[in-house]
Length: 277
Image (cartoon, rainbow, N blue to C red; front, top):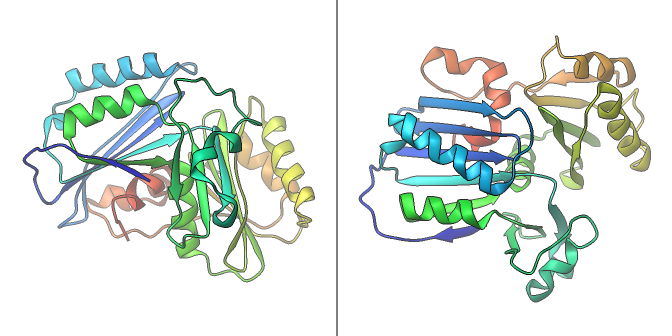
């Protein structure tokens, strides 16, 4: 978890969370005094963009959307990609952080390697943020927090997990999903998979279950993100995984349209990162 600081007059009750994906953006503005969602915007790109092109899309939104001209007491920026590695704290050496990523991504000399320490302090998420985007928001808002979305997802899921034994969560979006597996309150796996077809989708899920020795007929799988009962991903998942449910976050929000479970699943980490309960 990293913070950047500057001086700017803020409105105490207004908070904003932003999710940056290579193939899209999401924004959520919350009045924290009322738990009122004032504005939510989700933008999907036709294809994955470079960080430079993503910033161009962000700049365009700031020209078009008046809500983004507000001052905020808190801004949380979440990076969503597969460029991360979760490391036990006892083995983490900050000076060698890039070594934890070299097996799953190409690291340039100019890349900044950041890390999030999990709230229970026994895990560290090592990842590459997009510095052009963090610099942009620093210039806009001054102090803000950025972290990898996998950190936020795992921490918030850990808070709500009540199942004994193994339980899996799948946070699905266009072209990728985050898969989190916990057992007795401990993280077994946190990973992100890109896919193009429903067959790709289920392959990674079943392969992970096999590696972790999870019985597809037994372990509970909770879905969140964009997946619905009409999604081909849901249909193929239900064919192979028998204990599938949609997570119901039950966050107390106004106006009423934002109490919809499908919206709350889609915006789960944006809302939870702003303290919604």
